[in-house]
Length: 118
Image (cartoon, rainbow, N blue to C red):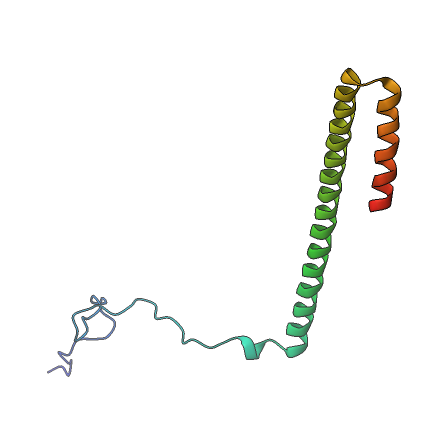
């Protein structure tokens, strides 16, 4: 008689994964546990990154302020140009009704008043 065992060997084909008690199949690759990485980064490295970010933000702010100043300068130039044009048109309308010398006298007087007000 042979002493061969009738037990199944573990070298056979793999069966499908079993079903859990709640009826769901097990996950094929379970996720690793959550471990925060803040303590894994040295403080000096975090501090260096923070200072680099602050420097970048300061540079961006400076560039934005410079751009805004240029824009305000252009707006002021346009407003001055429009004011000069309106003034010129006003004196041309005055010249239609008044004598040339009187218009010049009014212009000089208004110029003096403008200097006194500012």
